[in-house]
Image (tube, rainbow over all chains, first blue to last red; front, side):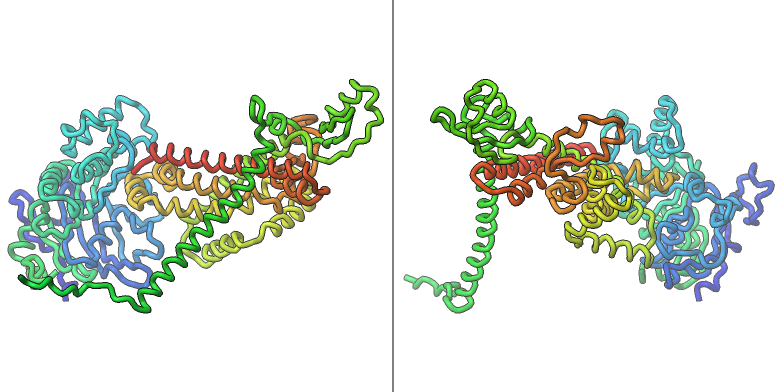
Length: 285
Length: 348
């Protein structure tokens, strides 16, 4: 069965500079070696009585793009929404077993304030959801909630975030018009800009391109390439080409279980598991 | 020459077609009957009320009717001429004409003067109960829709709200009398009327507010929470502003309807007659809340059923009803204007 595969440890390294990934926090900061930032450890997750995740273990690296792929209902979005505890909003959900650690801290622990967690772990949603406010107010929303009032600082953040989201040139002359006046692709990039404005550690993207046309999609994908210099990105996608194009590592889920986790190249070119191969080659899912 | 093609689509009369026509006219007739009823009600009140409210001489509006308190009407004959004068005018007349001292007059209560205290009372009742009902209603709608998890208690609360909506207004009146007037010792007072009316309109406000909150897309909340906003920050910044037009419109309409109820205020807030206006003769500020007021619906009730009926009281009845309709229409249109203003400001 798929769960029998232990996905995290014996991963062949694609980067010539990276040594075999012993997961140790010490002494690697200066080196090029990736550090684990998210440590998902044997997680079982339930929606009421029905189990959505079965014993999922994963270690995600800092400043890498990790793609979660798999057919609908496989649990990839559920896992993503565990990472900033968005599932807390749904009644009757719980992590029944295991733990999720971000930078070594169990995010379900008693010392963790979910508000602070979400400031560090931003999210971009499947359906772009700009607020019905001006572009400027959308970007500054998070900072203003934190009490930032300094106009010059807000202005600077707006420009930086919009540049970061490759949207500045398109909207710089209409910052005070409604964010809803933008095209679908622009709206999604606005949401990305809004997420990076609060300078999170990690950005979660839940099928960010599923409602976008190919040109907008490619813009968002280019953006993801840029963003990973600064942020750790986890992206859920139904689009296998997208996972292949823009992720460093890929996790394949099926029926609530992690089937295989490896470098994206390996998953697509040389998967260890026949189910993974069947899925990435389009024979099911 | 080809023969014209045979028409396969010719109409075939029969029972089904006949039934279709009958039903069509039945539905149409029922609809027009509603229009007729509405037209009759409004037509009668507007037609007869307008005779009291408007005059044929400039300024064409019966100013006294809007600005004065009710008085008794004195009808008498003096030097062969029939006179109709209110209390004060009648006294002045007697002073001016000493020989009229012993004139034989018939007096009719409340048939002269105006209904200013009733207008004031109703406006005060509406404003106060609206404030209380909006505060309590919106708060509980926010709790039910945004904070509460689905549980047996919450389901029970919803059931209670539904039941509250079905309670007859006279029962609310009795409740207000027992609770506020007697138990709290507030006597017949504005504040007792406010709470009674507010409780009565609460189900409408809660239901309307919940619907409006539900209509705000989930993405607004998730997007806000994902940026590290607290629940209240999210509600305040990203939910309430967009729900507000709906909340206000439905609530104000509900309150306008409840303001027309006589039963809830007849034991709790309304006086048959009161000399002073609510802001007159107060020894301390809190007295304002603990005084009874006159009110339009109760005044209509009094002049139509508690005093002898004649042509003179009919004028006041219809005049008052007309003004009352105007006032309710005014509140309703204010809510519509408010909604369109807010909609333009908070569009998505």
